[in-house]
Length: 94
Image: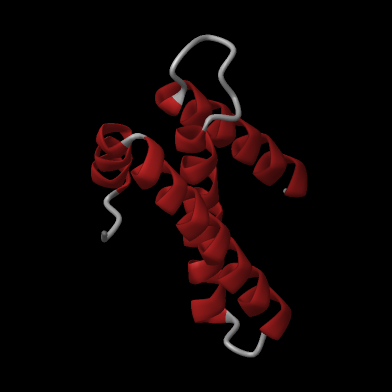
């Protein structure tokens, strides 16, 4: 059961990287990092709905949201058109 979850997570991660990368070897650009963080944030948000007293996961969620916010701010400052495209594709609020 757990191996299937890990395999699915790896497949999903590969799909996200491929859809947000700017060239073949791009795995660490801001867009890719934001997409991966958003996926983890969505997962932890669902986890928190079921396990409201899991404070360690809640702290991790807040940390991830802050990290994504910093990356988005950086992208907005350096490349506004890429920022708008990422916001739109991920359905994030500005």
